[in-house]
Image (cartoon, helix red, strand yellow):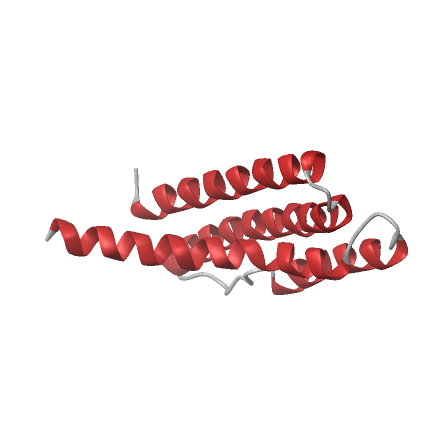
Length: 126
């Protein structure tokens, strides 16, 4: 399995772990509105991560075959973030907008932390 595939699997696992912790927080915390917002943002963030991974794989194939350039889906990911924000603003009684914004940033935090952990582990091996 390629390094890229391993990285994708690791990042998806971490996002699923985070989503399960957020669901537990929404169910058992005294702040359900914040956790519902965090859950909404995290679900859209997970979707954006999936779109990013899929489009990066396509971009790699296009680069190998030297065909026409492909996009990485920036407009789709921005649209998803806008939709999550609109849902939170429309249903303010259920979702906390700050939680949605933090949730939308979670996939990028997972990518950065995964990269840092990967390089620390590489340094320890050598």
